[in-house]
Image (tube, rainbow, N blue to C red):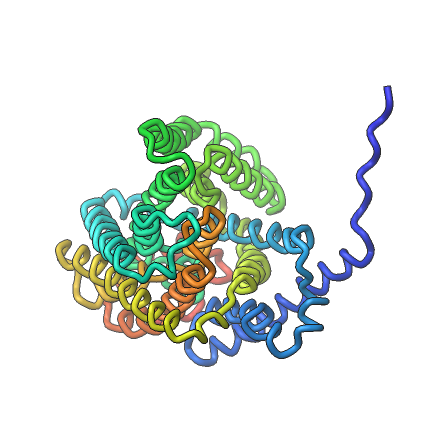
Length: 442
């Protein structure tokens, strides 16, 4: 038998480019994140802009030679950056899930249900209506107006848990009731969004089949069932990991479980971040790791991996297509519909649950942030031929602008929301002692 040839190592040039790309992206993301902070904006705003500056929207236009050398049109090279970015977003979402207060969610399940329901139905309807009315020049090569309209509805109804989570972290709002409700309702919206995306994608390729819909429902139910059955195992694992005073075993256990859960949901054709978020909730509720031991991981994720992820997301954005007047007008119309639909849905859901108008406004701002989740949806649509390049660019525009809108509206609204003792208890429970005395942002 002949032995398999060894896999050749990465070339010296590819390694040099990869390290340079990571270094420049992180440096620019940190600098712009700091500038965003000085402008009273969360760091995620600057981190998203870092990728836009180094991507085709700016650098390619002013220095094409350097841009093509730094970021060559090589899928393998770009996938290296994608891998680091995906690790960052999965751990960010896992850490976010570990901060979700299930007691609050259970106590206010009616509020979460109303916010998520209104936040789904209204933007979904607006998006479908817009898809039926937009000019034919924006429909992809699939040339199926019904699929196009449904796809646009899905893009309008999703939220972006990674962007929401980073924004809430940056603004020190994760422990607030509004932050907890936003995360819970946002995850419900995203689960429904990924389910609808699988259905619409099936319509674009094989047509609508009952088996595809039932399979997606069964997969989501299976994830929830496995999570419920895993509670004793998670409790035992973290009890063993916590026997040592060093944080290493606890951090490693956390990362392993998050990555395996993400791999599991991804294998079921669900989004990997869904598995990471569910696993984070499971760990927080039943593993109960010492927050002080997880503090180094949280610092590294928020300070290094998350900025790289948001910067790499910006690299895929090409805003130069908006120079064409018809595309720009259509983009502004879709943006207005997206903002109105999500704000109206979340606001009505909150007000019918007897929250104050400022709490409702803050929830609308958080739920309105589409971020890179909508970019992922747009990429799927482009790959399937449901969207063309112009419509892809419009959806990316919506994702960027809605993410930038959230922080200033949240800041204004949360200044008028009363800070409760319950929120202070939740904040102290999730912070290590070294951070416990930090001055609040709001």
